[in-house]
Image 1 (cartoon, rainbow, N blue to C red):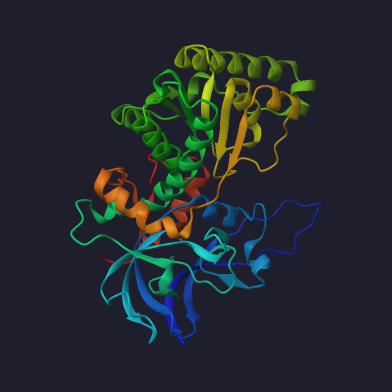
Image 2: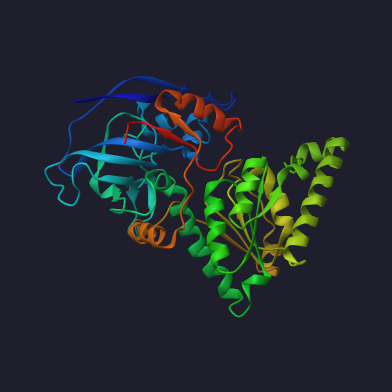
Length: 387
């Protein structure tokens, strides 16, 4: 058995329809796991990236991931740079000491897409929120030797890999309907976090107008620096739609309608009156109504996540008549991993060096800050071992 220092999440109480899920908390303790199998490697995580699935796991929303895996406790974390310490006897392609990116594939379908995610819903997998952990060697992609980008920049890779895959599909679908138009006349707009930011950079490279919301000055400045039109979310603060309150609370209805009006006017100005051509919506939930109000004809709503809600409602007749397409992707295709990495290396499409870096002792604070919207930048990172 191998022992390590780790942040651990325990299963919550038995779920009940009458009671909301009880949020979990991370506990630091010694965690034990079995010795290496032939196809596995022992690694030291260096930099971990705080991903949305960590928030889902801790909030036990939509599920208690420990109970789903039938495990009393788990170690989370599936986005990180790691250093190889030891190889299983069957591993020939990686070297001890090599620094790699973790690919979060717990189980892949026949096409190479993720069905279960490593260190999230894939049973028996051990995440990177530990001083040492093990994983299948084929879930590692080496950081380019003598890269022109820093290790901290490479630590942002997960959101970029996800963005690359989603944009590949969204762009192709949009062009399938309008193959002859100039994208410079069309707006790609998004709200969300680092994945949306990365995807808008790809849209800009293809010649689209690009804009994104943010609700703090630091993020607005970062968007402008990248050539993305910043839109201050604070100008329409009441866009979260609650159907019951809208029907019964006149004051809420008025404040919502005013925010929706300002938002719609903003989009009209940015899009030249056409509406959004491709809307990157990784939030969903209460913002979905306002999203659909500003998507133009032949427009696309594309998503890789569901941070504020999973269940959405559409009027199919309206969507058909307006020829609007809805795209859902998850992670990326395993066989594209090397291609995406090489594109990042050669093109410079990669995150700036993260400036919000939490020490291993501060992981619970990072979790709390992320949950409460206190993270100022797009790529919060936690440091596990010294480089």
